[in-house]
Length: 131
Image (cartoon, one colour):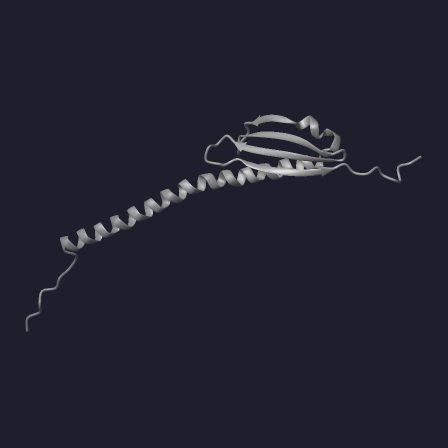
């Protein structure tokens, strides 16, 4: 009895089809990787901007009430991770009440500016601090 000839390996057509399918899959993965890398750059800037805003809000809430007008103006900070411009304005709402408007504008054009408003009240004098 004669055995049929065995077919070993791949034919050229099968190899070309496999390489073509692999190329299409890798091109799709490369495109996805590129898009995700482009989107992650602004997101890192947004996280840094939010950290700067939290830091500035903490600074202005800890600052003495009478020192708030001294911070009015625009300051540019060029330190990493986020170089930015800070604009501060103070509005007197009442003799013991002020509104501080803080605008953080990142120098990176991919990150949008943000505005925070903090209202501060002057504390009453300590009644136990009398002679």
